[in-house]
Length: 405
Image (cartoon, rainbow, N blue to C red; front, side, top):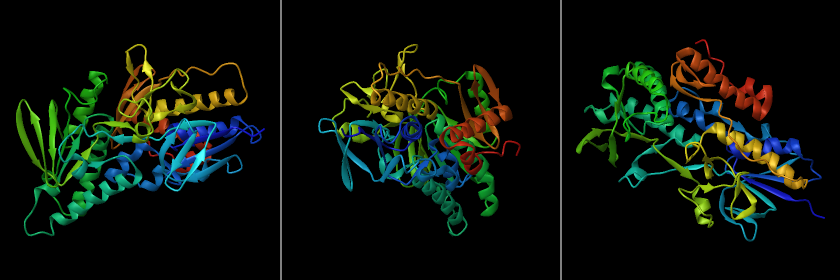
């Protein structure tokens, strides 16, 4: 009898935790495990805003897959998934095809552009190591060019962030720390640099406690970040953006528009015929596709309903990681023909947002935290994930220890 073949598509938070946990739960004689990923590394999506601003080197954000998987138990395939055929039980990649008995889809997210004119052509996205590195280099290039042109162009020093959610606010916080360094390096007056966050809602960080939001705004505004709320981005070009507020249109000259206002699941799911909304599948209580018992979906491609609010849980790294643990346990149960799989119930410890420069805010176990205490807890949370993934060695290699700086 052939061993069941488990294929895990995507090495994001959900996919990689599933792999790492599963290699410890089952033996090589019980099933074969194959992990497919575009790159030979996993990256901390929640750290990419630091790479984009230039406050953390991208090598600290990426983790070699070979450092956390056991090659005796997991076959790693570096390739890009292009399509899934649930009926034939096959995954198609750019360079081949693989069959499965059980499939875990963790293919991550893509930006959602909401039909804004020029957004796809001219805006930057914080979505990967390479896209974040491009933003950093682009910003530095514009600062370097400013004093090397006879005509000073304000658009080189204006940065627009589209979206005042988690990513947008954390990126603004890192820019608040990085810009004074860039000004000093390139002989530019800080007052000439403008960073504007454009948010369609009545406030940034919607869903956060109003006191926490007020703290974040005060912190960022005191360091030169501007906010436009109830403002709708209408058009993006190579050297400007147009937004609408109170039925009036406004223009900001800028070479740098960073879109951080919305994401959707991988388009591979829609192309493969899954029943999706914004490329997400509303999964069953044990994280399976409702139409295919042999397919689990985790991370940004999965929608899990919060029964208290009647809305899906937000796609956070915390939830994706917990999905990975749950998925691994359920696969073990199926492989061993145990009676029941486990229902996925998120265990939310809290939510913390960094504001740059050792500042942060959020809640932990229902308690509001501000400033340094919040920053310490944020870094501890980041290090905890590293420990879950690769133990003490990975924490020492990649962890955040600058809690007293």
